[in-house]
Length: 93
Image (cartoon, rainbow, N blue to C red; front, side):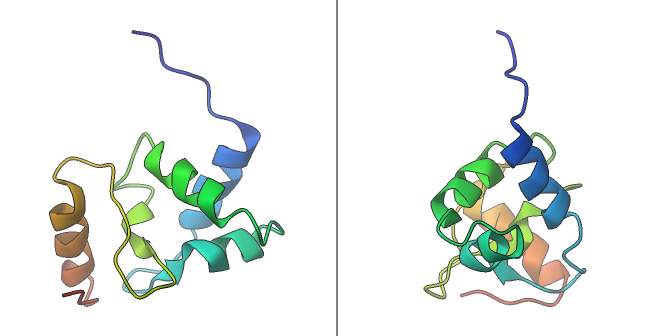
């Protein structure tokens, strides 16, 4: 199985995710706005889902605008995302 090379967009999303402070969250839409692509929030969510290093590039800190937690492609899924956020002092029910 060959791994696809990340796109420039994905790299930009992941680089921006790396700048989210410990214990803070932003929404997919806020992240899209921060990279100058305000309507690309679904593409941002897809880039999060392709993140090859979901703990070290903390995509668990990116959540849905609706107040829901959103997805998590790392091992353990949404429960792992909740646990990582809780460890950082961010609680999602």
